[in-house]
Length: 219
Image (tube, rainbow, N blue to C red; front, side):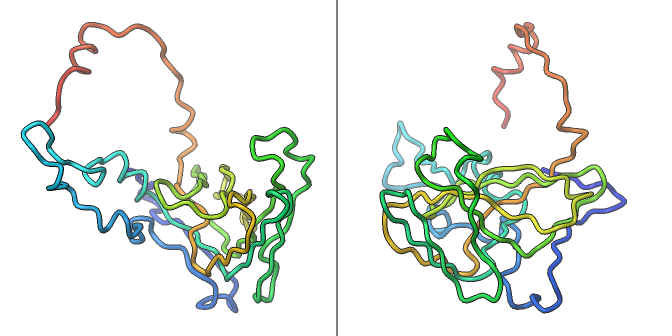
């Protein structure tokens, strides 16, 4: 789906020497499919009939492509989140030797749909480098089980920005204590070529040929 320039085909995830083999590493999204999806049959025989082909979402390529594109950047070390006061308070703790969670000021996102939940931030200890002209789109992992948090989406020009990128998030779970294990998916990283993202839009009624093409079933 995404093709890197011939001069450089790799995205690089770099960590400190002392962190290598200690913090959870990034993994290709296609290698860590959720259990529910792995167990789902492509055809549900219990629903297959003369009027129902029984196909499941496992045969839906748009769904699968979204789930498997790019890389999953995981939580570096186990974190405990305690949600209190109807979501208004989020406390965090960890045993790692560096900060894993910090806070943003609520005024920075005043009026956002997640209020009254406070904006927090997961600290990430992988720097990300892409080939010239490529940025990284960071999203909550697509089509995957909900976590007690949701990271905020963003795009970073990772061909020029070399520092660690941290991930703002909101707690989404009811009040309670949640242990988020090391390796839990935080965000999905999808390389985006900026030149391709700058396409102009053409908005009009379709032609007859375009209507015919739209109605054509490709097999």
